[in-house]
Length: 213
Length: 332
Image (cartoon, rainbow over all chains, first blue to last red; front, side, top):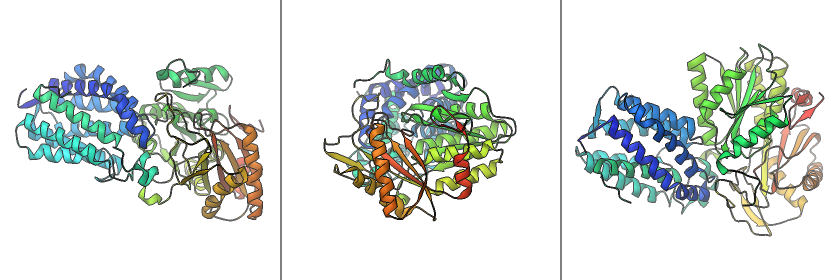
């Protein structure tokens, strides 16, 4: 893979995301059944199946056009809280990408930072509340800390996202449907953090060309 | 899962298609956007009222589309908020030049999607959109540390009373004020006797023993307060009414709304209504209006919720106003 991601590379990332959401739909739904309303897997796989369908055509317009179209598609198809959150993430990434033809490690980091800020704004959430931010925040930090090598950065980000996913288990939810469980949410992994870890896994696999599982 | 479901992915569209067939004189359905609309739209210059949410709570919201109540309802996937495109299509369909009030139950997904829809509507057509977020459920404690109280039974009362105000020709500000007032004066709490089974998941969402009840349940099976052994219906009424009365604002007569969760027969709901009436009488609370039935349900969950609304003269008159919808019909 190159040192910078073109729109075609980003489309490959989104295709890989769709495949992983499909493969892990049941797992995401089980996590959600424990503390939410048992629809996260179905919603994410439906949304990313739609993104899968538009990604190649949308990539013709460049990275920003692709990210914008993918974000709108998620907002239009996912529903629940995840639709606006993941949709806002990609829409903010699109704005940050501007008219760049490709995104190097630093530019992609900027885009992710803008996207994660969008998630925090839309969800009025901050890290530590047992949400997808608890995977996004450490992932972004690890990604940016890994330097200019895109493969190394994406791999570090994916590892941190996976760890962030695990680290949501001991937290008490104060946002979203799980918040109604209060302390009874402790011990369960947050489904949004789990789907976020899949997006990072897809990125690492796309950048390195290796499928981890 | 033993259900009359042909395809799990199609439950919402199939149900909407059946609803359109069952009510040809009053409803039309937009299957592409999953909207329930009035066949005869409201007159120009009247405020339109839009609601929606995850499916599985029928008759909420589509069953309340009609004269004196909603102008449109957006149906999401089961227990999943509809998406902004649906609300945007609904806003365009129902706007009569006087603005649109969105009635939104306080769930993170619903709030975010309706918020995005309002932003889109303002950006695209300049339609004035207001929202009232219902949050009448007292079961959720420490609400400042959660996503806040859930919107449950009070939502039906907001839709009825605000719907009457809009039908009378009041302006957007007045209709919004009335909807807000109903929400502020309504308090609810629910109890589950069995779990709910979400079609996409196919198995019960939570485990509840044969002799156990979950007190303070939400409309998706989310727990709220505690679990205990089944007690007589009058004690169930007490368990629900005591926390409601502790937080019900104002003074004077109330509307008593005994709601079924979908899997409890009307026979039992009337028993609970009688018991609730007695508990309220003991507490010195006068019940001046009643509503008993399955109005905001939770698929196949057995259980019930009680909502009290502290009435005033204006709210009582609007509650009494004629309404004609598939699920609530009176005076027309």
